[in-house]
Length: 184
Image 1 (cartoon, helix red, strand yellow):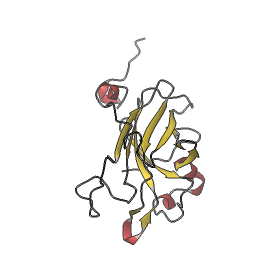
Image 2: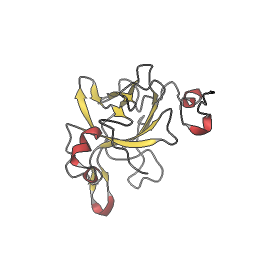
Image 3: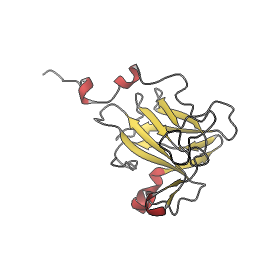
Image 4: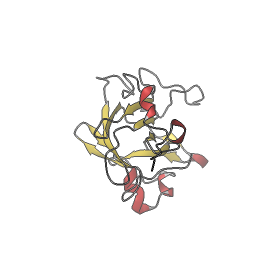
């Protein structure tokens, strides 16, 4: 019997490695930027195996809560802060993004969202990206309106743990401990 393999139209990866990464993609800010830290983690599949051909994309506010976008009513972020990072995983499924702690941003109906980073994950076997958020364990997340919609027992999958050089945020695509993903 002939085994059929996925074609480029059936999955977002591993074809993304052909044109999406760029040399400074993992750097939301340049090395040496005051306050910069690493977010590191591992992307795992449903069996808990590392995914060596995934890509992590991040989008975030600057430390003052502004975005590098012309439609941001609070004004464009300044300096060398890019607001966007993109990092392919290594053969062991690990990734790293160098960034700054984002500021709180406005939510709906006058609420304020906790400091967070929006994350897209692209990987083999996915028909579309999956979207999640990174919150920080040493920050006050209690009033965040988006996190409040997540069942309490699953919120831990969205919280990055403090490390010596920043934070650790692992992504589990499915199975036990699956990361919470949002429909966007």
